[in-house]
Each structure stands twice: as structure tokens, then as C-alpha cells.
Image (cartoon, rainbow, N blue to C red):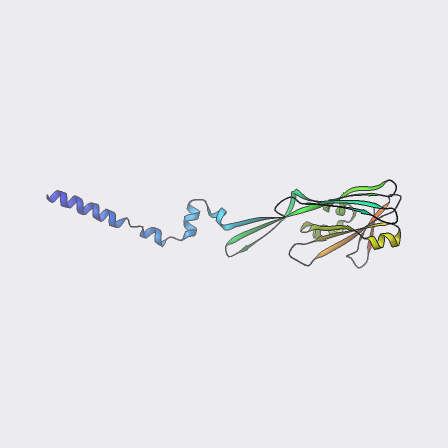
Length: 193
């Protein structure tokens, strides 16, 4: 009976020593690191916009111009804005937009896609700005189109979560010649195509 008591006493001591005191002293971040789960809990990744979107507009002007603008999300191209706050890495992916413009005046005079590459092809001085910006809007400036008897399309790029914008004006003549004007700059750079 004496051996049985020693055995029971040994089992009780073993059970009392395995009460999880070591795990109580550990920080949760250590447990996550041990299980290789730290990255999934410390990173918040978001995409803007979350899904594909598309806006089509058709404009017929009194001076004979017709314009079709198809603005859509480029799901393959985005820029990343990341920062760290309270030990969490935030990654915001801002998807780029593109605008396909088809303009006619008795026949098609302009058919091209407006995006960052298009602007950079005509004005390399805005490269730094365009890296962290998205195409916000493309619209026909009806007042200037009728006034100048040329098609005037406004193009707006913006940096998300800021008030920084750059606006361009695409002026298309009835014979198909066009020029891109950076109207955000005070010196009115005229960029010919």
C-alpha cells in the first residue's frame, strides 16, 4: 500500500506542476510568432475600389461634335500606400482608372485611352505626381467646346486622401489634331502631340 500511495502522490505532483503558468506569462504576440501567424494578424490590406466599375457617357454637342467616354477600373494596375499604426501594417491598394475616348465630327477624329501612360507620353514633368495618383474624372467641357469650336475634354488626376489634384485639358480640333494642356501649372504648359 505504501508504493501505491507514493505513485498517487507522484501523479498528483505532476498534474499540479502542469497548470499552464508558463503560457500565462507569455505575450500573445510570442504565440503568434511561434505559429507563423503574425503576418496575418498584423497586416490590414484593402483595395479601392473593391470591385470593377465602369461609367459610360455619350455627349452630342450643338456644334457637331459627338463624344463617347468609357471610364473603367484597371484591375491589374494600382499603387500601394502603406503605413504602420499601433503595430499594424496598413496596405491600401488604389486601383488605376482608364478612360477610352472616341470623338467624332462627321468622322472619327480621336480614339485613344487616357491613363497615366498617356499623360506621361506628353508630359514627363508630372511623373512624380502620377506615381501616387489615380484618374478621378474625365468629362467634356461643353462651354469651352462651343465657345472655341474645338472639342475640349477635361482630365482630373488626384492623390487619394489629400487635396492634391492636377487637371489637364485635351483640346481636339475638327481635323483630328490635338494638344494636351497641363492647366494645373501656372505657366500653362502647352504640350503638342
